[in-house]
Length: 166
Image (cartoon, rainbow, N blue to C red; front, side):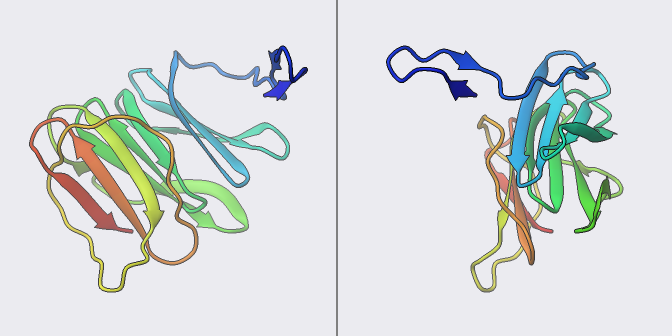
């Protein structure tokens, strides 16, 4: 967004994405050259745009309505209304396409996943765990680039937070 005046800001979009064909968008993340947005469709459609050309690079599906989303330059993680997280990994730094990383999906609960975050793993000896998570909310944020990354997930069902080393 670009305000046109400091005194009376009027916001105008810098770029309008006209090829949005999903239902209402529920989450988005911008990381480097990527804009990743998920809609509330029953298939959980996730669109990936290249921010330098504003062209859609890829469309992924989460298999259920997406409730939260985060992205890094290497990973995309989507929490779903069906209680699982689907993760995709970028094929290589020179290849902009993503492929599913975990098979099967990470089934955490039967209740919706409320929050998923990606970030760099910096602490020595930090590892991944498994299990459900506790309440929470929101989407976006995250980091993660080269090297080890961690994914943290909150679900609604039990009072725990889960973390995985990616």
